[in-house]
Length: 603
Image: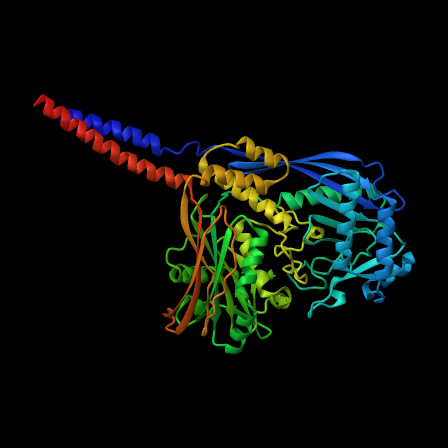
């Protein structure tokens, strides 16, 4: 009897191990992305392209156990005469006489140039409209359009942006390249270059931070075609290859916890609280990453003596009446507070596939104006993130938190936790400041009102986060690409490829998820915005009012609006494990039963 039961148990354990063994966990995931880039030269002389027609540009990016092979077909075309005339007419009817910037006078006089000003956004919209018509006329399909503006009317242009209460014309002098809410980039080769600031930008707050054009204008280029070709290659490299997550991950729900820390400066804390809009932060994050459902909550806490939060300012330096928070000390102390304040914290990026992950962001309303510094150096900055934790101090070096808007600062650091880099930054440290013109929270373009969009997502972030999540899903499933996933990647549609991968991994069962956006203050009003789901949903909303006591012993009223919605199963790995455990119990019971029956027969 014992031998029969032992055999049954061994057999059951064998099958259980087979069922629970990870399938292909070490499989290398290789993603292939194909792009069509259309370059339209608005140049009456038809000289800037100088023989450029069509080329194929390929890049390989290796990231640990996954890689991206990117192939771009680039087609260079001249804008037809009707488009040139339309663009020239627009410029002539919208030029504004703003004078010549002081830094440009010597250059202007030496080249005998005329300087005119254009408002940036209306011009960009007109260029977008014209470029779409040019492509439609030629029957071209493109993921991106790169517009090159030549010397259409022998005028050197400067761009300014209005309306915005804190903008000054001097702040946008010399913008060379710019991209808005459409997949269009333009480079104006007739912009007078601005001298490079005397110190490294933007961390020292010297002059125009990043969008100053330091590139030579058209009339100073010895070989315009080679220059334009280099710009296009950099456009591809920086806007599609600025990612290399060594541990790609995916979570159906991304939770952003904003903690406003009051150090006793009640006026400052109130001012900051009035500036934070949780709905706006949520919308900004979802612009960068429409593939994850995002929730945002805000709470106000007091820093009490003896706590890690209080030690942040105790260990701060002082300079010219300001507090200087050192990155090393600050990040360690805030991590201690976050782990205590949020029990069950699931840091983003800690696993390739999780139900939900958390990003905790501290806004420090210090007793005096403050900014951050990398310990031991003069590297000053606005905020930081460590993957799951971030912080900013107010008003930031050079008042950048105020100029850039605190909601955008929060979204910027949250974007880093999602795996995004700056538009001007490559994974191995290469920097190309000219690429920092994207209208996106990930740019240092802090004077652009990046969140005033209607319905569009930022195409570059969406493409990158789709690739990150796609790699995370495939790594968790331990499988290669299905034909449907490969098809969408080949079309340059990583978002659609991701949706196909989600069907493979998440489409088998339904699970319940709860999303709430909550604001906790002395008088609390909840903020709720709609969130995207993978499948059709049924929604139930209800409100609850109750008393809540924070750890700082501040009793407040909290009104919570919570939305419950059906979404897809969280991970196939979890499902497989649960099934394996059930099968283990079933086989064990069967084995014991068989052993019992065999024993009775012998008896």
